[in-house]
Image (cartoon, rainbow, N blue to C red; front, side, top):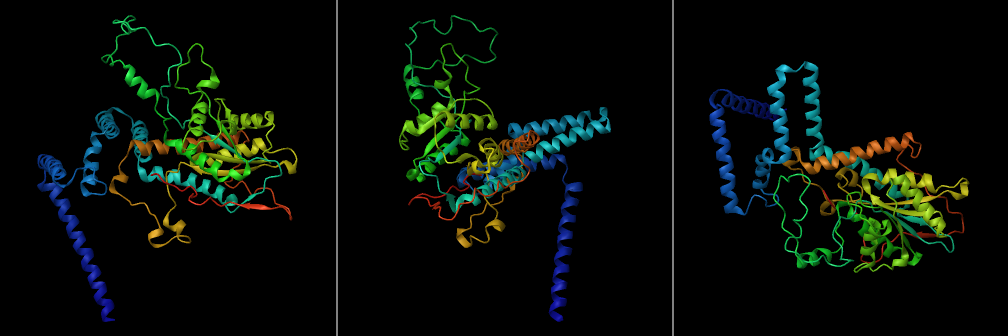
Amino acid sequence: MVLLLTDAFLLLTQVMLWVAVIWLAWFLLRTVLNKEVLGWLVIFLIAAILLLSFVQGGIDEPGSILEVLWGLISFPLSPFGFGLILLLVLLSGIGGNLSKTNRRIIMAGLILLALSSTPLVSYFLAHELETEAIAQVERTLTAIPALPSGAQRVIVLLGRGTTRLQLSPRSGSRPTDSPNRGNDTPPAFPLPWPRRRPITETQFQILSQLPVQLTEQGDRILYTAQLYREEAQRDPLIVVSAGRRPDRRWKDGDVREEISEARDIQKMLTQPPFGIPANNILLDHDNGNIHRSAEEVETLLRDAGINYGNQIMLVTSALNMNRSAWIFKQVFDGEEPSQESCIISRPTDFYTIPTPEQLKNVLQGRDLIEREFRIVDLLPTAEAFYISSKALQEYLGALYHFLRGWIRPIPDLGACPIILPGDSTQDFRPPPGDTLPSPQRW
């Protein structure tokens, strides 16, 4: 009893001390520290951080207190943070001339913009979609139905947006040298920036000989090559679906099949270190959406006479894995029950990792990889806004495809066709040295 009273007294004392500290801080901010004093304190803090950065290794040292403080201070100086501050200043300046409804609408827009740009919110939105992608993998992870005799393992790569626009080696003759070349035709309107320096022949050779440049979604290509290696005993065939780049200007004499993104992906897959034979790669050069890609891939396989055993291994980003798998199943399913297709989901390009609560039954101790929360995760960033935008676009895309009747509002596709007694299953076991894909980028 005495011990219980002592604990209660200590707890009450701690609460009273915290109340006193908070009241003292509030009193100082309201009465003692005026705007001028606070301004000097901010300047002193910035100067102290810069001074410490020269002494202790820099403001960008991962995990240091300087990195956190600099992230807080530099946020208003970033384009994103400065834009938000200007909008708030504008709202406060014209607030008296706006109706209450208009002020609420503008404030709601700013709050929505700030929240969607916060890493905590963006990771939550992405995590929900990527969890569905993992659920799609589970049903085919331990055992893949055996392919019928004579069938090939077909790996479909949705490759749109996985590579960057870049220069290629010269196919024609070099322009004739002229001291005035490049200045003969004046611009249609005055340029607000100075003319850029011309590229020399040496610089062009360097740029044109670069390997294929990957975007954030380039993980899809690497994972496809890994799956091809894992499926080597099943005579795998890769189908790359990626059309013409919308950001490349069309020139006279261009051929769609030669300048498509699918061609660049094929070039990468056939070169070292992958070395996949070109005749084991089919290209879909269509520039449509996911549903159009599914239709084109189905037509391509049918016209080529490929026996894929009603099984498709689909590779795309985890964010749109669920919608893509549903669309491919809707396109590849036949009218007869025996023609039901099996879409083997293989997502990659993860932004998040499972939470400790989700991993408690499979990992513990040092094996449990967790993401460390940082104060800067509460500050809006352009990267977080990009992730939130992609996640929200995926939700809207799923709604559109549901209204079109192409997908169903349930996350699980169901099991692949039942394997009858006497049929064999082929365990999904990565070759020695290979591992299954895991979320790897935050």
